[in-house]
Length: 451
RNA sequence: UCCUGAGUAGCUCAAUGGCAGAGCAUUCGGCUGUUAACCGAAGGGUUGUAGGUUCGAGUCCUACCUCAGGAGCCA
Image (cartoon, rainbow, N blue to C red; front, side):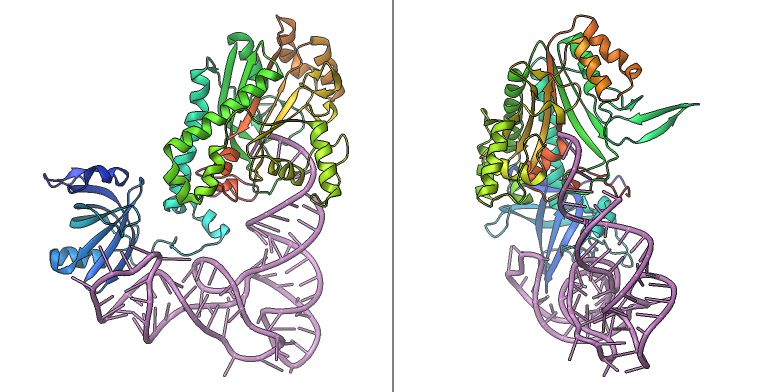
């Protein structure tokens, strides 16, 4: 599989064909679709960067080339040489007048490519995820995901944060609540897959000042919704000598940066995935500052909404917000909304109480617009040794396992804060997807671990 | 864990308790501008599994299995 390419041909990718108009180029890719109209063939090639339609008039090419292409099976791998020609009839503006073809691997007639251009069900597509990835829409989503992941790291790299990734194997639950994936760790010990690196980045923040982590996270929760995976990627910044006000500013500038990066690079991909001009305009509005709503204000909004019949169940003072509540709240704003100062009683043990109202925690949830719900959860952390120890005991957590964490408050404790952002939920929001299973190459969900 | 819904051709779906069907895909034939191309033909079935009711079950009943959506919990 090391053929000699025609010396006249430039090697190109489909995404860059506009720069080769009028030239003869060679593409390496696959046959995505094939239409025939008598003595005229319309093959569509894909190469991972896009698709391009070829034109093959029987009279214009050698007999052998025409017959080979006419009978070629979908998703066969190939190298195709042709002249790039602008054509108003083509969706991308360009077509390829095919001059040469080299089939690398022909898909057998007996086992045709299972994913067709027609509609498929979720079960079938997920069972064939390794092949589903080849479709233009899924490829576009993964390109956008890659840019989001890069931007998610780039922002911190450019703002003085040091990347310090925490361990994936952990000795205990960070928050003591979520379901964990458990495994044997030699002899008598158990290890668990991390559900959050937060406690560890608190330690590195007190060593390096501003830090972040970026990696996979695992939750064995039996959640079956469009927002849940058992394995997902989380980015978690942590800042020393900073509190909730600085955290809120970070959230809004961070998300604005990521959205701007995607818009700059992927308007075409976003359209292909399903965002029209009107919904692209919604993303354009994602710029700091974001609206800030306290828990108490949000509660009042929900009570009013219930009175008007806009929310089915009445929100009760002190309760957390349910999914329908979050959907309503986020629908009231044209950009992500930051809801802050939830009741301490319903939040994690490590969250700092608000000095102006100790019943409230210095925390924030960022809800994405268009009904996508929570994408960021963050807080200022308890920095007082005695208070943290008391909280750990109140939550019934094993004090011994948290000695190292308490040490952070014994040796030069400072106010510090951070958040966790789920990458898949951000991708789902920006791409306007129905379900997070399409945001990651191989989704891990409650009922599926194949392929 | 709970609630709701769905399992019929490779895929997406039809079928009043009464002969198992269509579109797409595949194979064959036709068509020089198709955009999920179109036109004609052929092949393709243990109706998720196990019981039950009935003269007769894809359809009704019971249990189980699988999947999906939602709740709770969360990013």
